[in-house]
Amino acid sequence: MIKNQRSISHKMKLSFIDIIKTIVRLFFGANAVRWIGAFRHKRALKYNFRKDYLLYKEHSFLFSKNSIEKKEALITLYYHAIEKGFLHTPLRYRFGKDKIKTLLLNLKDEDVVKNLNRTQIQAAITNLCYYYEQHQEANQKINDYFPEEDYFWLKERLNQSCSSTIQTNKKDYFHFSESDYFNFSNSRHSVRSYSGEIIPKEKLEAVITLANNAPSVCNRQSASVYVIENKQQIDKLVEIQGGLKGFSENLNQLIILTTNRNYFSSIGERYQFYIDGGIYLMNLLYALHYYQIVACPAHWAMTVEDDECLRQIVGIPESHKVICFVGIGMPNQNFPITLSLKRSATDNLHFI
Image 1 (cartoon, rainbow, N blue to C red):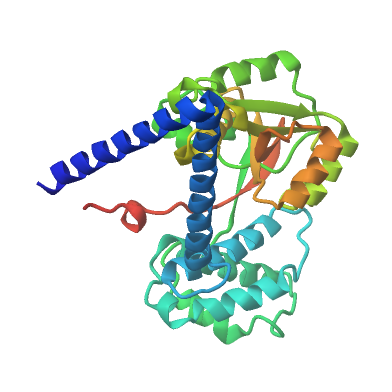
Image 2: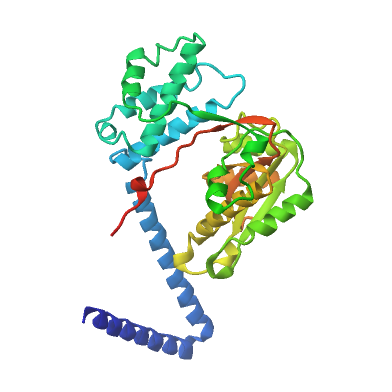
């Protein structure tokens, strides 16, 4: 009954709008009708962006840490920075001192202690224990910011093996690159160690041909892939982005993935280019893995000022929204990868 009432109300509203349009068209012409339509769309777009702003302000962990999800997100942000630090050879001892302090403080938060079995919390504990043990083995003193009692407190709550990195080699890493999907997907990891060898254009064309199978809204296929091969430009871009700093010495090819705003129209599609871009990114990473090219995505969650700096360096059109950087290359014979524990299904599977 309520649904029918809404349907009748909607039809009446549409009929009223049609009448107004007809009157405006008669007295002011078709251009006036289009102007009114554009005005309504602009007003609706501003309203929706305003609601997005309020929801992000309320629920992101930018302004508050008042839920286990926000606290977990902060912990994940810091522990991932620590596990990346273990990839440097030789290891830079006492790295990430302030991040270690923050992690130790947040892991003893009341809400976090009640959720120590969550995968990402366990990943943080794993990294901290590994950090402490690596320093102990090297006789490096860290008690000024990582007390022994904190290590034992964490160790008692660790429910898995205490290692933060995996040592692998080229043969083993690509062993499942042409396997069934289960093994193929589980075998791909972000790799930040490159030999410096340039990937041929023909091979990259094959990668993009495969990546282009990615689904997109209404098959609009808005993604574009820019391959940067100028080392000076790469270094400038890495400096702005930040996530690949320290791993770019032999990074001689950098992908910039974008989506084109020209392909989207409705108010509801105001963020669709991010969705299509994310889908394409995953397909791109799998395509690179299939063709035995190692890669590391580096997010472009940056400000408009950073966008402007990027466009000054590489001249990507303003209509193209940068989705992600992807560092690519051929791997060294032996190289480390981060453990990067993934959530268990019990963490994020919900039946309603």
